[in-house]
Amino acid sequence: MLASALTSAVALAGVTALGILTVLHRSYGLAAGALVALAGIIYADPLLVPVAAFPATLLIQRAGGGAGAGLALCDLAVVAAAAVAITKIRWDAAPTLRRALVPVAVFEAVMLLTVMANPNKHDALEWAHRIEMLGGTLLVGWVVAASGRAKQAISALLVASMVLALLTLEHALTLHFKPAQFGLYQKNFIGATMWMAFVLAHLNPSWIAVPRRLARATKYLCGLALLASQSKQGIIALIVVLVYTTARHPSIRRRSKLLLAAIVPLALGGYFIITREVSNLKVNRFNSIGVRVDVSFPADFRVWATSPIFGHGMRWFYLPQFSGSQYGFQYIQPPNIFVETLVAGGILGIIALVLLLGGSTRVLLSMPAEISTIALVLVLGRVVEAMFDIYWTSGGFLLPWLVAGLAVGTWDSAVAGRAPVARPLGIATGTT
Image 1 (cartoon, one colour):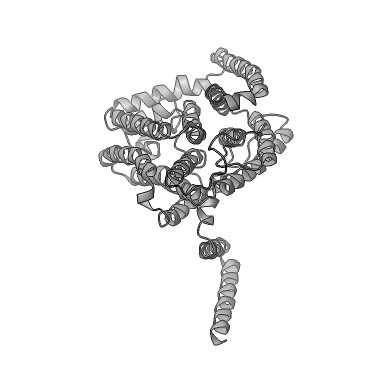
Image 2 (spheres, rainbow, N blue to C red):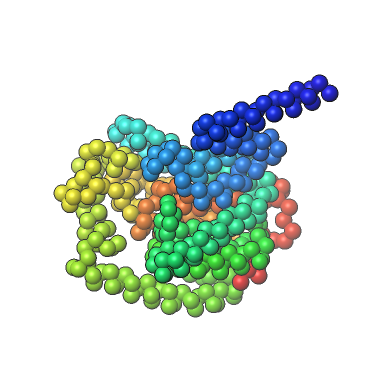
């Protein structure tokens, strides 16, 4: 009785203190409240934290304020989830996870050389950030799958994606069908989120098996929102992924006839849009293609030429010496995965990236296609998208590697005999 009374008194005092703090300092109060809620969740069910990391990939707001200041909320969610996940992993029962972490370790080891060649806080922090973006996501995905919560995590993600899709469609109508974007949710981030959610709902493998109605609703809403965003790179990534999956899996090909028919006018429309922008380069040098080809990339290559082996560091564009150029603009993160890597890490950086993507692809291909396909197409589809956009970004980057962790965890569990599979592992049917 006395212990219960003391507990109630402490809880009441804590709530009162939290209320006073919120009144005096709103941001501190909200942060403290979030920490208390997180502590409660961890106490009640620690695995809810890794599950929550999936829908949290949509939270791209910065915890430290403006752009470039502090980690994004999605990164903080993955850090918290990884801290929980690492305590739940049985390494003797995770052989595929160990192999999946090898390319990440090799990548980080090679990129450490560019950190040593360019010692500054931006470079060091980004090096640590990529450990979380690559290794942390794999750990989180593995634990979610091994605990049998893949369906819960992906369902939460799809619901969050539909909320973003509805907001995107509302803004498209408000803006009279101009590219739909709002606040920090730029059209290319929306496009990346929409095509990935569409693919997850369309493939919906049996080891995830989200409800069919949820999958259908996600496909329709996210497909429309992708078009509303007018993200060309997102549309290109989706086309490549759909063509690959329908060619590789007869079961998907049988239920993708309408999608394949829709790809033709979509591809033709994209071709004419790109052709028009190319033909308008003489009139508008700073359209989306002109900025890349005529302005950004030539300037980036000139920067790379001054340090071709080690590059200038992973956040070189934050440094004072790159605050401008002869074109009169401030250097930005190059919107191409290979140009960006070349400037940031030099030739060593390109080698590291090839080892990371090649090694990760090899690990995924070593698993049955029924398990690995969904992870493989998200990881490589993101690379296709990043041929025309920034690769190392919070949010859009995290999801493919979380799903890769899911696939690895599913396979390790199946091999260990822990996965309660009611039917042969395969692509689920009925998500037309």
